[in-house]
Length: 136
Image (cartoon, rainbow, N blue to C red; front, side, top):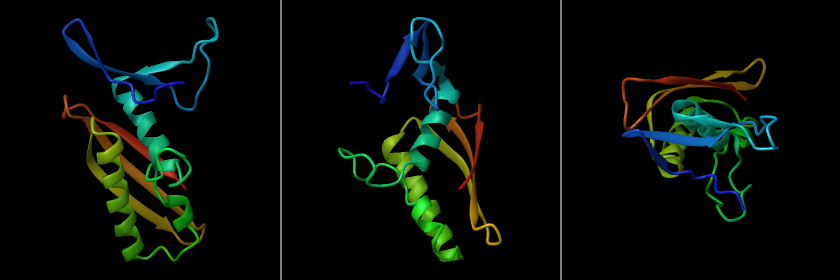
C-alpha cells in the first residue's frame, strides 16, 4: 500500500518535503512514479485535497471538500463563505505543513463555475509562496 502522507525528510541540514507528482505519472525509469519536492509537492497535495469529494475515500470520510456538489446550488455569499471555511479547515486538518496566506473563491454564474485561487507557503518558510488556481 502506498503512503501518501509522506513525512519531512532531512537532507543536508534542510527539511525537504517529498511527494508523488499529481496527476500520477511515471518518469520512464524502471516504472517509478514521478516525485515532486517542497512547494510543488504541497501544491499538488492541496489540489488533490480540494478536488476530492467528501466521502470518496472509504477510510477517510471527511477527506476532501464539497466543491463539486455545491456547483449545483446558487453560488451566493453564504455558500462562498461556507466553502472558504471548509477549504481552510480541510487544509489545516489534512495538510498541516501548509499555510494558506490567501484564499479567493470567484463564482461565474453564466458558466456555472467557481474559480479557486490560493497562495500557499510552508510553515518552515513563510516568505516563499506558490499559487494554486482551479476552475471547477
